[in-house]
Image 1 (cartoon, rainbow over the protein chains, first blue to last red):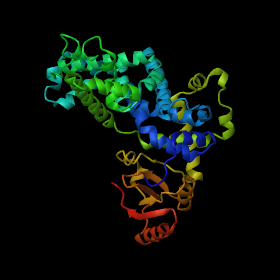
Image 2 (spheres, rainbow over the protein chains, first blue to last red):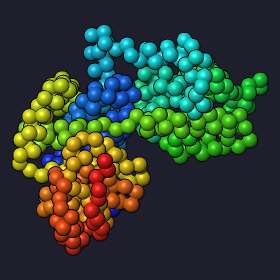
Image 3 (cartoon, rainbow over the protein chains, first blue to last red):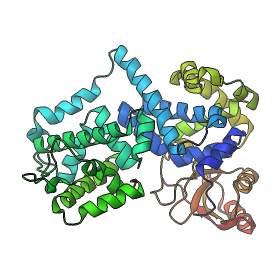
Image 4 (tube, rainbow over the protein chains, first blue to last red):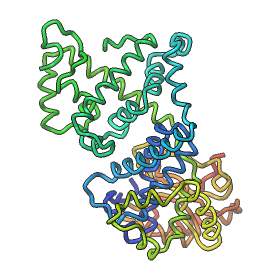
Length: 188
Length: 232
C-alpha cells in the first residue's frame, strides 16, 4: 500500500471530530461490501445505493457514539441491515416486494429447464441466489463478509447457537436446491 | 464426535453435532482458536468430515464469486454523501438525537432515503461552486480495483494522472496536495499503490500536462506521477 492505512477505529475517531477525509476513506474502504450486502437483501440497485448513503451519513453524524464493542465493519453492516429491513417492511406493507419469490420459483418449478445448461459452479451460485432472504443473509455474512459467530449474532440479533443452527439449515437448504438442480453434493 | 463416528452414519444428518455446525467458520478462517483446534483434531481420521469441509469450501468460493459479481454502486452515492456531509456543520451534528432516545431509533425515524437524496442534490450544487473535493476512493489494495463510476461524465472527461504517494505521506498532506493542484482522486489504489487523479475537468494541452507532471514529481510526498489517458 502506498501509505499507512489508519485503522477503522481511528478513522471513526477522526470522523467524530469532523474530519471529512477520514469519512471518505472509511466510505471508500467499506461501501462496496456494505452495498453488496444491502443489494442481496433488497435486490434493487437504486434502493441499495440510497441505503448505503444513509448508512454512511449516519456514521458521520453518530461517530462519537461508536464504542468499539464490535468491529467497524460489523457496526456498518448492522446499521445497513436495519435500514434495509425497514425498507423491505415498508415495501411489503405497500405490496411491492414480490420479485424475490419469483427467483426462488425459477429453481423450484422446473430446475432442469432453467439451469440444465449451466456448469456446476454456476448452478451452485444460482441456488445460492434462490435461498430465502434469511438463509442468504447468513451465508453472505459468514462466507463473504467473514463474520464470526459472535459478530453474526450481533448483526442479526439472535443467540450464537441460533446463528450456528441457522447457518446449518441454510446450507442444508442449499444442498436440497442443488439436488433439485441436478447436483448431488453428497449432502443432505 | 463427528458424523462418521456414529454407527450407520456416512454423512451429516438433520441433527448436526457441534463440530459440523462450526465447519463454515472454520473454512472462512473466523473460528476461535480453541474451536479451530478442536475441529482440526476431529478432522484427523474422519474422511467424511473432510468431505464436508470440501463442500463448505465450494459454497464459500461460489458465495464470494456471486457477491463479487454484484458490482459496485455508482459514484453518485459518494457525491451525494459528501455533499450531505459538507452541508452539515459540526454544530448541526451536535444537535443529533440524544442518547436517551437511542441513537438508532431517533436517527432512523428522522430520515428517508429520498428526502436525503433531494437535500443532498441541492447541497452538491453549492459545493461544486465553492471548493475542491475528493470525489472518490481509497480501496483495499489487495482487492481488485473498483472501476466504478467511470461512465459518469465527470470521470470520462478531463485530464488524469497516475500517482503513487510516499509511504509516510499523511492523509492531511495528500489533501493539501490535491487542493494545491485542484485535483481529485477518482480511483485506486491499484495493486501497486497507484491512484488515478483527475488534474483538470477538461482535456489539457500536452505541454501543460507535462509541466504539471514535472511539478508533481518534485513534491516530497509523490513517488511517481505520470499522465494517464482516460479509460474510455
